[in-house]
Image (cartoon, rainbow, N blue to C red; front, side, top):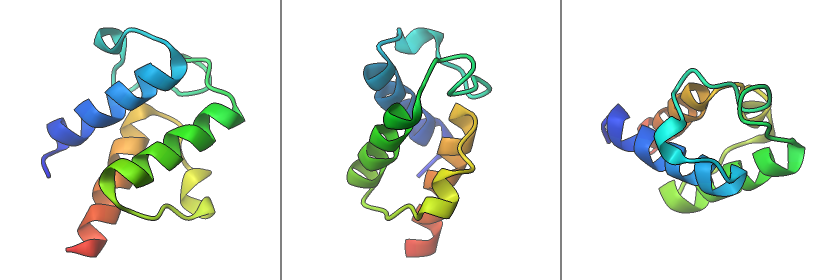
Length: 83
């Protein structure tokens, strides 16, 4: 999967969960600071990423999610492990 495709999915999921316009979401947006995500939002986002991409994201990886770009990197890394 290309990065742009993964970003589109992550962006759209984050926008839906956080009730923001997906057109305004960038890779450098910080989930907590810029998008006002709380712990429950981050848990929902990682769950949805697991469902959408068919990956399992361990807690230690979830804790490293700071930006939208981090979520994209995480998904791509886990997809690469399955290849």
